[in-house]
Length: 196
Image: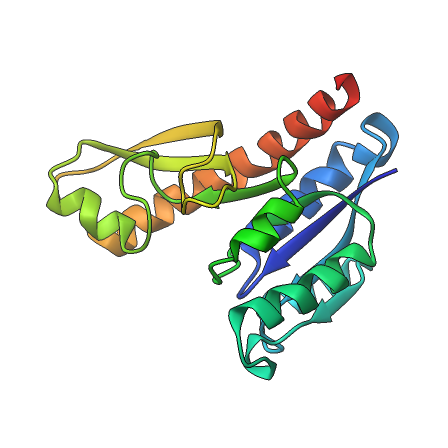
């Protein structure tokens, strides 16, 4: 069984979309895969309750309990490894990971970013796209590498930028695409894992 470990920091809507797809598309039977655990760096992350409601094991590794980023990442890796992950999925995990952590899961660590990378890496993507006069924004699923938001692209979806768009309005439309694209990209990754 291929174990998926999902890391979150907040409401977990992308995590919930992946869990829903795993159930409705019968990943356990068709892909020999399951969401094995959801881990957060915040005890009050709303996504933890969603995961528990689906019977998925959850845990918290708070970054506030560690003096350095390196110590936090080491503790996080220990918790991730309890679940023998085939794939580690960042779904709104709002921590920059150390090179050590990224290297440990190289090739099996993916993230979603709310822009059409390589455009607008980092934060405030929707505001930046509007200010730049973009007519199209979107979402990118990519492998995580040491360079922030620059890993190989696995999937993208475009979203039009409307003339009267606000960052919040654009963000809502992009998020709807995230919920569609991310589960599909995870399933595609799992299928490719079968052929490697």
